[in-house]
Length: 320
View (tube, rainbow, N blue to C red):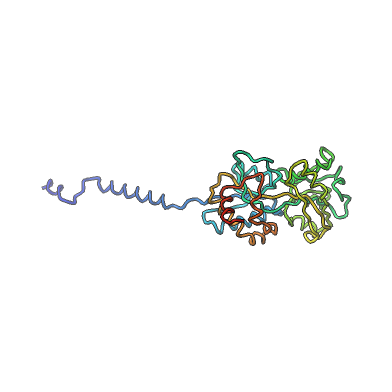
């Protein structure tokens, strides 16, 4: 009888139910892994001082990327600016960043680790001093205490080159390496006699300084050509009108500013970033007017850096 019962149709052998349970669990786990949401792509944007243009621009760009690219989590990284930004991207510490053209190599590397998304605006070199002080030309810096910008900044590169062509190299100037905020504070307290800062107009820290105390920006127009002759053709002359800071208008040295990217970022991601950078110019300009000066036609001029293939693809489709 027991043999008849054990052989009835539908009767399972011992262990079958357990085996089915294991298989079902494995199937559900596999499906769960397949359907689990992927981690968003981190986009760290290397910027600069909180009161300078890079930071304002970078914050606005991060907000746009977070809003419009669901699989991206963008954030801003405070840095000393240009030179540090390039190093961070090269080392994998950031994905995007801003840099002056003059901190880049003068020739394109065969396999660059950093490529360009866009030329965004021109940085203008400010030589800032007190309104009633003795410094009226660059020659007046001799023997003075002067901040040449934070270590690792584009300002430091440009300022030191300018001092060299003006025959103020070596110890002819007492150089301090202070960021924008520290430079403003030191000038107000008498700790320095002048400072350099390179940025798009207007630079908030300099605006606030001019509101609070008599300020002079020194004309540097005669030094554009000597800089071009010694260091390359990136330098141009640009005006700083009275309307920007409420001080006397001057002409100064400027050089292009780029938004750059790690070369190994996916083409589609960089194409999306490029599209939003160009399509949201009006919104970016609310964060800082310099962002509103971008255009697809000027953005593609990024020598010596090549455009990232994703950026190049967007510009080709847009036909600037």
